[in-house]
Image (cartoon, rainbow, N blue to C red; front, top):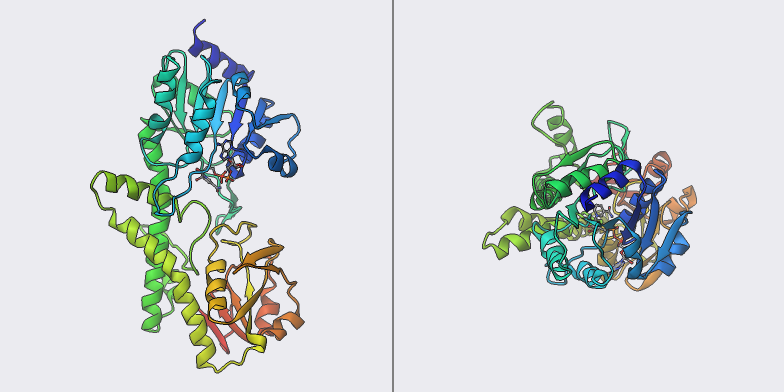
Length: 422
Ligand SMILES: NC(=O)c1ccc[n+]([C@@H]2O[C@H](COP(=O)([O-])OP(=O)(O)OC[C@H]3O[C@@H](n4cnc5c(N)ncnc54)[C@H](O)[C@@H]3O)[C@@H](O)[C@H]2O)c1
């Protein structure tokens, strides 16, 4: 039997071994899903000591040794794709992995790349490896790209739906028809709906555009927020009104800035590619600038709030509520709370914080511990800033007890005195 049919049957019978390279946020979610289908899993991470301490999946073979990829039928790559300091794509993790894989990949395997990256990367990274090995792509080796869409957000507001890997359609593309068939068959094991793209590049571009769309729209409401604030119009009311139009309008909520490891980074991958092709993606560039600068604008509004009301802070300290980059999650990556805190500290003030999901943070070189919200605490700090609006916060207590309240999320209802919502 040929390699294609062998793998096809293994997938059909679910009798296969999957190696996940990169056992971080994405890798762990996929492992969990694959395990639920009783499929053998090899978890490969360069930092496997740390991973083993935090991830306790039974029946998984953990390793940092690339020789074990030889035991897998399918290799799923979930490695980080950060930015270099100059905001250009940093594919070093992927390139290092390809190098380490070289001696151990074998005929009959399928590689699926899940990392977010610019169109063209999957081929650029893996075709030289396949050629070096003298494998015949689509005959005895298979290549797939399937971007990950997982989000730490648990529920989509209003619809009350919990999105996860199973119920979020998964994009997938193969290098050829045969790769496509195997890719689809694999992802059918982990998700209900697999949506096929006509090429690897199209699937890569599609993931980029999902994140560019968010970045541009977040920037748009943030820019409008700054302008409407200037002419004393409440953006939240405006957006709520516009949101009553049942078609043609998607509401984005303005906030203190964006965070996480996707939206602030990924658009620059496409920007870089456009530049390489002598095309200036103006929206992408401008949205990045607006979204980064919004934290400075918010900080200046905080200081105006303090100055205009002639507030005398106790020990020059401000209390921040919520430091995660969005509500109801324990993730602080690129959180605007840090930028705002650092700006405050740079002006000679200090902060304390409360976040039910985050026990400690390091800000401006100092370790801070989350404080439990009590009436006493809220009264102790003259100025309280809501940066992230976790559902776990007792908003009634905050509303009733805070002396001066600066709300970056429009989360307090029914208070006007000594309150500012932006
Ligand atoms: N986190 C998300 O919400 C999310 C959502 C969609 C897409 N993505 C994309 O998925 C990819 C992975 O993201 P993540 O958040 O899981 O990253 P992560 O940083 O949480 O995990 C990556 C893991 O890879 C390991 N690693 C790095 N280099 C390695 C190497 N050469 N060999 C073996 N292991 C190595 C690290 O030790 C780490 O455990 C990125 O491209 C990201 O943009 C992430």
